[in-house]
Image (tube, rainbow, N blue to C red; front, top):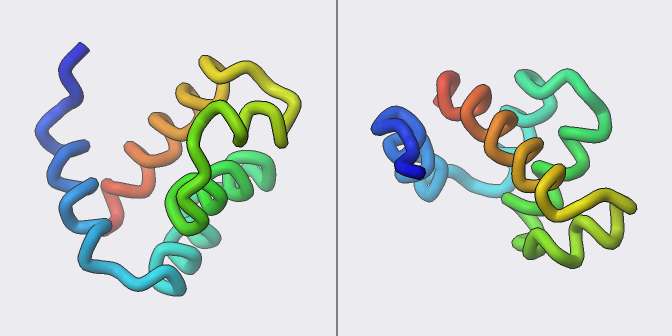
Amino acid sequence: MEKPKEYEEGRDRLDDLSNSQIENLIDEWIHSERDRKILKRRLIDGICYEPLAWEMDMSVRAIKNIVYKAEAKLFKHI
């Protein structure tokens, strides 16, 4: 499945931000505490999906879905 162009552009812009800027954006635009934690662990700490799923007691598929949706929301604002 190909990701939308806007998603890829957001991913590129994310590379130009510091970890504190990313954390501030996550805090501002991601309203679920669980999703904020997952996204911070993924984007700032660089944790892979499998260990993150184990840590959060969720399936890898669920983690990937949360990350994709939260990233798409975040990328609209950077």
